[in-house]
Amino acid sequence: MNRIRKALKIMCISSALLAAGCVTVDDGQPVQPVGVPGKWTLVEEFSDEFNAAEVDDVKWNRKMGAWGERAWRPDNVYTKDGKLHIRATYDPHEHKGEKYFYTMGILMSQKTTTYGYFEARIKGCSKFRGMCPGFWLFSRGKHRMEVNGETVCYSEIDIIEILQGLWHPQYKKQTPPNWIDCNLHLRLLKNGEEKWFRPNDSPEMCRNHWEAPWDPRDDYHLYAVENSKEWIVWYIDGKEVARKPNLYWHLPMNLTLTMEARPPLIRWAGSHGREPDPENCTPEGFPTEMTVDYVRSWVRTE
Picture 1 (cartoon, rainbow, N blue to C red):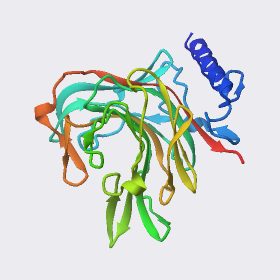
Picture 2: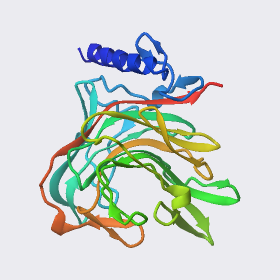
Picture 3: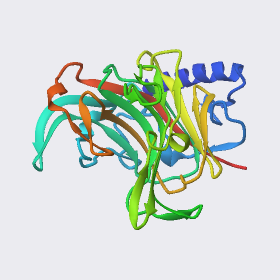
Picture 4: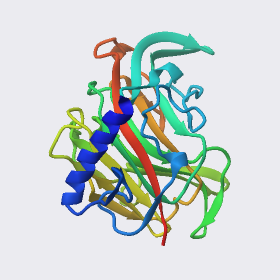
């Protein structure tokens, strides 16, 4: 039944996009990314329709250890009715001497990738402010690469971060729910030490945003990025919304979906770290979850 429901849904979406000249179809399945010209090949290792009764743990990793204040739990990532659900729950606990107030979910590809077109159809979570659904690529481990005369130690492409509700230093305001961030993060080796480059301190190189005419909590939307050797280009619902020259983002990266805490549930600690803010960590609005209709990844066949 889930397969039939998903097939009908894909056919309806594809028909609408085909009418707009955005996609061609073959037996109800898209054969190229939405809104991007060229010939493409779907990459199964980084694609999933989430029709199975359980998450494909051969393709995806959802059993990650804690990162700082982020306590991941595999049971917060599950499939139901042809969709992926990533949940956050209020669950005060201690682990290895550290205090946590929430558990969250992560779905990360087992394999790494670099260039291609990566898209997911996502509906945001109900909690705002405090929780941020994210769809991103990031490098892990001790990868290093010489690029443009610099040593790159870490690269991250945020396809989207939604519902962040952060203070924006340029516009001097707290960002609203329809503010969608499409940012970059980077570490370069400088004088023997790794130095961060992020949206706030390197906005020309790393910061993008798009203000949607809708609320991402209300419905599903298609979020995507193409990473090529020359450019990083972001798309929402088949429309280009931002681009940056690809100066450094050439490391192998994992395709990832997450739910993470944001202020007021956390506070920034030091220049780039973060920690729970106990006074604001309450059960209000929890559990909450983002849902993902599908993830599809493509490479150019030219």
